[in-house]
Length: 228
Image (cartoon, rainbow, N blue to C red; front, side, top):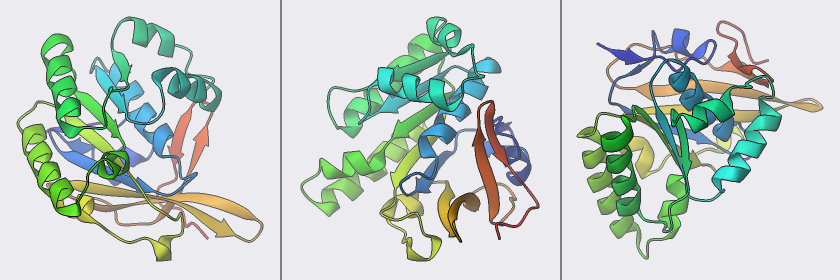
């Protein structure tokens, strides 16, 4: 099976080589868990490998994301050049609408050969629906469309808590091909970031809970290490 290497140190090892091509993964985490950083580096590493990426933000502006990532990853100095070459694109749609997101993805795949996509976030889209039933039906239709497109995507799903024991799973977790959980755990007088691959269809993967850090040069996942 062909796989997309995330390029994130340690994560591909846990994924037994990467995310299966064409699969769609939920990145689930609470406040301060590092969701935007993970998504940005996934696209950045793809752009470095010649796989153009698209970040669809439904809340923050592209300018805000870029500025935040400059301060988070100051050693990734080639980001402006990758954006200029359209190997890395950031777009904020005019509407909180899955149809609009789908149209943008189709257009960028056709015109720019997008191979990786980030949708941030499903939670924002959910708020735009009047009923839970309508959202579920539209989400199923959207994922059916994604599976017909030549793209491997990550969709952010926001949790109300960063505590592992208090997280619960919703419709996105059942319909997506994979789930990567990010945590911001209490450890005495400080917090420790950790992750686990909760599911990933089509490939063996580690089920360990491991720590990670967001460093100036990128995310480091410490495979084989204990969180506490």
